[in-house]
Image (cartoon, rainbow, N blue to C red; front, side, top):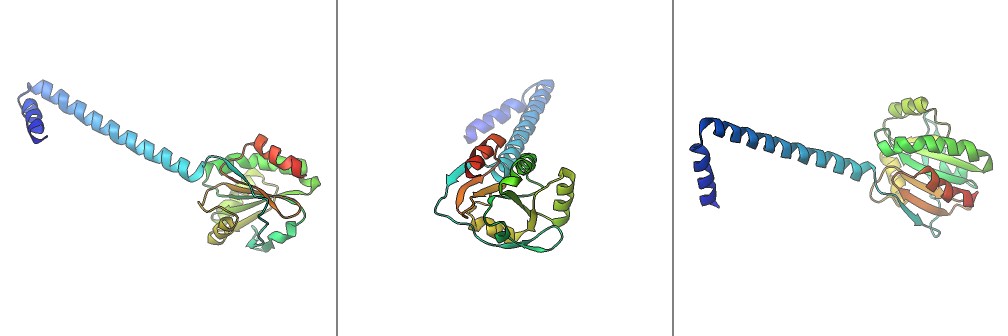
Length: 199
């Protein structure tokens, strides 16, 4: 290997000056291009791993709702048990999470469509309260929003989110049994197929 590197170096040193300059430029461009490719791969792979987790749906008939209490946007503590005897979509999300933001308009529409059939969406924002409030106002979110940080992540963990995925959604039936858990973005069609049999 050392001999090969020496021969390559000797070859470059004894090139004509203009050829040597071209070779150096090509080597520099190649090095920069490889660095950019590596950075882009890291950024996109890292983001998709953290926020765009492939959809996973698990039947969880043996698991029941876990009660908890978190503040709403006005700072008032809200008990999750107030939504007992309803079909609940419990959604953990954050303002910095692209798939979270993409699925929320569907939640708004579906809540409007089924709220008179004992259905409720409860969003748990894992983020700064002011950022959540601004985003909710901008999007005109019409369903209950709770706010949390570490406490909310602990609740998410209790509901089976051991990987810390966001978004993370749970569907609970009227008897308080967890029927489905989903890590990652849920399409509108998929969500309706999960909810409608429970209503």
